[in-house]
Image (tube, rainbow, N blue to C red):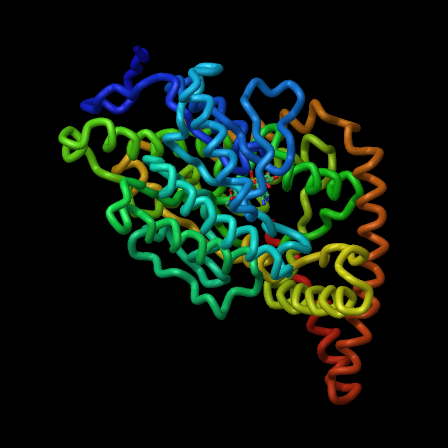
Length: 438
Ligand SMILES: NC(=O)c1ccc[n+]([C@@H]2O[C@H](COP(=O)([O-])OP(=O)(O)OC[C@H]3O[C@@H](n4cnc5c(N)ncnc54)[C@H](O)[C@@H]3O)[C@@H](O)[C@H]2O)c1
């Protein structure tokens, strides 16, 4: 007989320990955080499914699985069932699924149509496998980008903030995350299936050990590339610990409804809904980096590049990237120095409310963004000097490519402007960099 544990939410039934959860894309920073949280807080049995292996010291079960390959997915579910029926290793049938697997969040992938294959086709495959194998709950990692595409948003509620129009997205990642989210939500109890689904939209993710964005930002700082800010905007961030708590609570909300449908009517349901997840303490997007600047002993940039200049520059970088990709192939072209989607993310105010997540499944961030930023500062102060070899080489290469891109960009701008006086005025405008008041 399985032991049971109590949910931290009051008035909810108990849930069985050892329930099998598979986390697709579980070997990244977020996946490992969630695995830890699910095991420690609930006693769920975690299986990570990913195309890359977990870190060596990982304690979790792991299966190599590409979500774009529906046969590989099927094999994963069938293998788990076999283990269950033969009683081997005390592993259960997969009852719950968290889907984090994704591509194209930054750099080249944003402009690569293959991103849609992974994010959309992969999600479709996961939904179909969940339905075929009678999975109870699926929690999907969406993104703020499904509603944000460069327009200002002030504490928007998820239920009432409209999706950003497909055709206006400037990158494949955001568009594909939206399509995938709609598929996940539409699958909630669809066609009499018992699968319940919910979608969490994380703000920009950070935390000690985050490996997607921060090491690169810090390497740029160390190499003197953090010279200016762009625009002035207030944005949300989410620390990995807060995000893991949100995933756990959303998953448990759905699980409890299966375990005890009569009790389920007594608490709000997350099924079929989307939720913004952040620390709940919006902050100036560049101010957030100040503690890390101090830790790395580099001056906080006082120059502010106007948004319109950054957008025009990003547009040109994107075009050059596409042109070079066409000419010499994707493999050899480095990522554009900036993309418009990245500029909008840091330079246009967009904040979403976490009130719905608090109300429906008791999400309660334990760390504010200012506290989290201080922790990042301490983390990178201790890591002093660690980015001097491979990273430095990569950044040097980037500087070289950037220089080439700038030369081509200047050439293209001059070429496209109808006469010399227009070109002269254009460069005057670009040089009007505002010096910050403070
Ligand atoms: N990092 C952020 O700031 C941010 C913000 C909002 C939303 N998100 C979303 O959160 C989720 C997790 O983000 P992350 O930062 O941990 O990303 P990550 O890249 O670190 O993790 C994604 C994981 O998916 C795996 N993966 C990629 N393609 C796969 C495939 N075909 N099959 C199986 N696994 C595959 C990768 O190997 C990786 O381990 C993603 O869905 C992302 O879109 C991230």
